[in-house]
Image 1 (cartoon, helix red, strand yellow):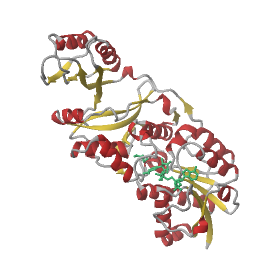
Image 2 (cartoon, protein in one colour; image 1 turned 90 degrees about the horizontal axis):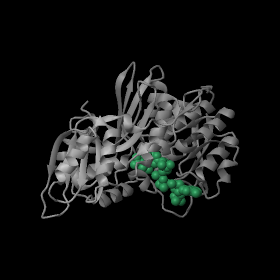
Image 3 (cartoon, helix red, strand yellow; image 1 turned 120 degrees about the horizontal axis):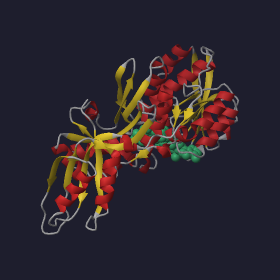
Image 4 (cartoon, protein in one colour; image 1 turned 90 degrees about the vertical axis):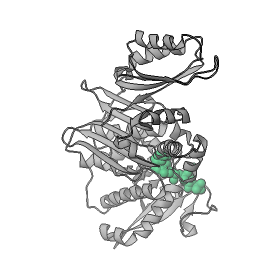
Length: 434
Ligand code: NDP
Ligand code: HSE
């Protein structure tokens, strides 16, 4: 039976899951491939660290050349994360004629064009299923399963940490900080968890989904991104009282004019909506396409074994290439002639909104806020305020009717500039019932 040697860069959460799955499923993988996959070398920073998986000590190395310069290694699996030195190692692997598997969404979203061009030049594969929605094979679904269809929108809960934090704050009395710490301990959070809670990780994943769904390359920096770090226990309770839960959503949608809207934001989701049932670190991606209609991809979106599953399925696909079952000519992003684009401004979007104003309890303040909203064409659906003592800050919550973002933003700019306004207005879109 033929043998394929692979080199792993990184043996943390995902690397350990990958090694464990390769070992536990060794026999079934050999039968599927008619060949064996052997992890020959593994790059780490600290070889003395206790590991979740057992590898013979000589397999561990701190020298990337032991993998990148070894002609026997045909596939490099990058699981160290971050941009550098991951980018350098991936490009070196390709220039040395090695196929690449990675779960690094930051790398693919920011430097995919350069990496895919190098792979195409050398007719090598780059696979990155683990980069979006952990163990859910959603990239395969949009790349292969829906290759026959025309996708018009992708909307998802694609950051497990943010969903875990919001869900924990909703279902228990845990504080934001306690919930983030629990996500870090569980291995969901990025090495720098601000990537998760700022929405940046979700923007990376949305850029990759946009590329594979529409053949359009957008820069993560151009995606309007709001994190969950401003969501307070007060907002979660206020949403709950009105029949909603707060979820961090990422959406890319092709408008009828062909322009792409893309954003990441916490949003109020009706409790009956399919996204409201996505708990913990689970992810869900709802795809709208012309032929199939709505289809939903759901499952564990992060963690050692779920992400390891996606990485190993990529390793299988690459090994099939290496063993000559498939001659690959499709580019990794599945589209020839990818078009770069800048998402359209959000001003044209229309939705209901949740607003929480930070204004003092002074005579006439409600009228001033309401008339400013009205002057910009923003209609009020409902309004509540608590009534603290004289001149204390109100938590004035207003739910608007559907209105364009342009009108809403103009009204909020004016209200936030009132001499009495103590802090910028909290605002989140409200998702329509499904
Ligand atoms: P970890 O931080 O758990 O592991 C990183 C590994 O890489 C460690 O083994 C570390 O070595 C090694 N490493 C880091 N930098 C270097 C370096 N400069 N040189 C050599 N080795 C290095 O990360 P994760 O496993 O959580 O994540 C890996 C990748 O997978 C990231 O791109 C992440 O975004 C992505 N991902 C993670 C998911 C998750 O649930 N955790 C889910 C989906 C994708 P040492 O052990 O010695 O410190
Ligand atoms: N930090 C990421 C998350 C890991 O929480 O979703 C999975 O990509």
